Length: 80
Image (cartoon, rainbow, N blue to C red; front, side, top):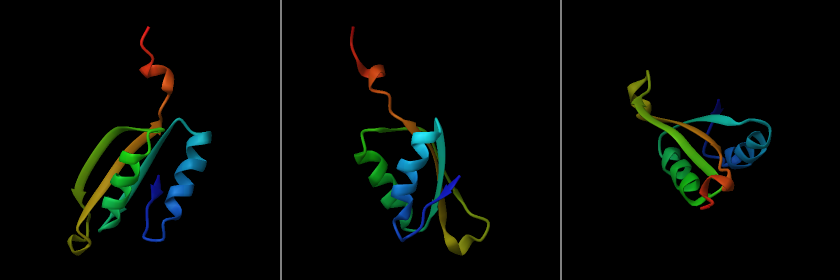
């Protein structure tokens, strides 16, 4: 699981981990979750498999976002 923080290092971490793993789980809270969704939406090389939202244990931290992604295989979109 990769935790996404404000520093933006998670973007490089996603790319590096997707080279080695088939699927990756991301978790973010606060306003960072909007940055994560925006990044994943714009990156056509990433496919969102599962998207969950829920309140974290400490309610003052707000809503948490849990996203399961994988590297998008272009061969799936080829029409034959």
